[in-house]
Length: 216
Image 1: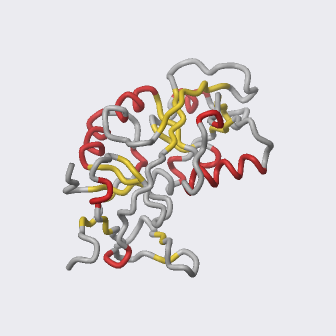
Image 2: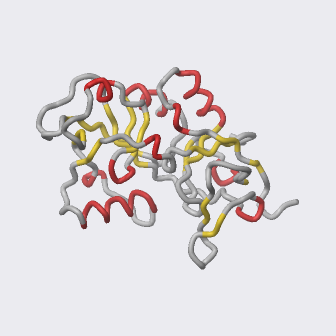
């Protein structure tokens, strides 16, 4: 497909997407958890399915039941891991996601034993890193570090991310590690999420500038 429009999302940036949901991993805490988070976020080393969590749980004892019952259909929990509802899973899997994977996880109470009734939940692992960000044609971005290989952009103000989507023409959702904390959505996937009525209000969609790398 040819992307005539691409949207950046603040799913991994905005704290409004964060929910008090912790994760159980079969590694020592904290060192193993930090390593898992780094690999999940950077995509420099893959994570095996066997390493995925079996369950997640509310990270605080005194969370109001209404809040528990009204988690968004897509959010980030502790370690900035992404979780989606069964309904969002059913929607996303109708689109081209490449190597991105999901695993169903049980949501439990703070005691890590009592299942919390209601919806199905899935751990989401975005495994598509495509070189699409064009920093030299973007507006109001800032270098991260001194090597000139990574950039950041504040979500407010006049920043505009320039994207050459040629390398992602087969995908509806991906990341580019060179621009920090952004997830890119195709126009058709963004529209489907908006039209679905699912709770995803803090994804913070903003249109990207479609360009050709190296062109005028």
